[in-house]
Image (tube, rainbow, N blue to C red; front, side):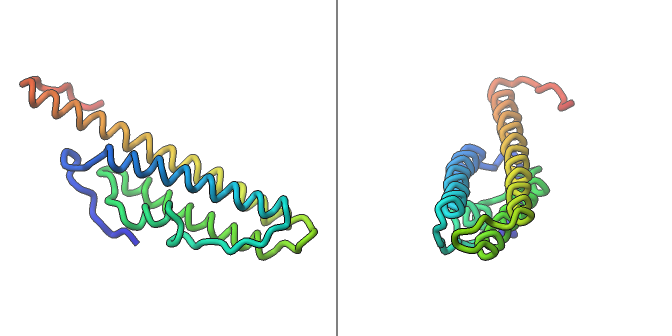
Length: 149
């Protein structure tokens, strides 16, 4: 589990975080598609845990963006719930039969919450990066930035 304290806002490498976050988000959706394929085509699939997949490893190992600890932890928790719901879903179904509707609904709802949470984290991180760039520019050009609203 990532227990790193956030770096000071002007020292944080936002671009590296955003690039990594975008990449692992792609891999998360690829994993989700594999789950859907396994359900549609009666495939048995060994599922990864949160800590084994690329998204989970990223969340466990990357520094938390300043001011985004709550959002970061919500994303990490929902990601773990996604993996748990996928495991429950896959183990509840019988080959040749539809999966349990309530379990599938839970899995889908968790995916929706996860999507909203990672969009909030990405948005907040991008706003912080813009503020950081404005402060650096203002300092380099001897301009006093306007107070934050």
